[in-house]
Image (cartoon, rainbow, N blue to C red):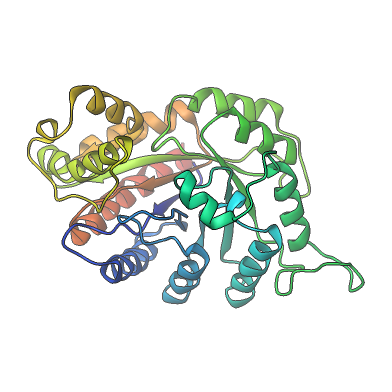
Length: 335
């Protein structure tokens, strides 16, 4: 594991506003930079009361301005919602304003419900053009001559690093074919994690972007002083995911001492399985869980995400994890 990073959805908690959520994301990013995190990514979701990162490129620009060294990016931009040229222009602008610090992760899902997807795209093509759109977008970020029929300005020549995001074999195969880095969304869809990593690594084709496979694994996190406190804090995310699963998404709920009381057993089982790639507990518990995850999956990078209702507890959770991951990385480097 070379680096460790954060994915944030800028969660809007019950009792607080979107303005609060954006301020809390900014505070987390500043703290994360001090803790030594390598990247801070934001995710595109729409029409969700509990997520404030819908205008992802705008928020990336704000977070990049609020930090100094950490790489800031999208985890990711849902490309079916956008014209590749416009994404190239947005991220080309970000890369021009913040040279060497911007990442662009691309996803294939709309990141919302179908009614909102129609509102975003207006015209929904029946064919899957994601591979072609990715290549078109990468082309706009490359070095194009002045007489090229279409250029992204800004964007042309910025070479913004592009990642493929996925939770199935599709993204793994595409990332391998195009020779791009790959991030697996195991923090909410772990079912095909190991198979996807095997497919990506075994079929990777070196490219101008990357000479060997480079994989990032995402995992949930909720670290606190004790196992009991961490379980209590994590209940907010469990409740939020259950609400999403049952078609009733809302703001990030207050934590509870008895999460099973508010979720039917079948739904709770599904949620627990979906969120199973995670480290939850005290520092010693989280350290053991993260060590096992890294030893088993051998990621080149690890990205953590965790929605906690109390913003100060969320910052502390990532501080605890950073201390652990610095130690694990240094120990492996010295071995």
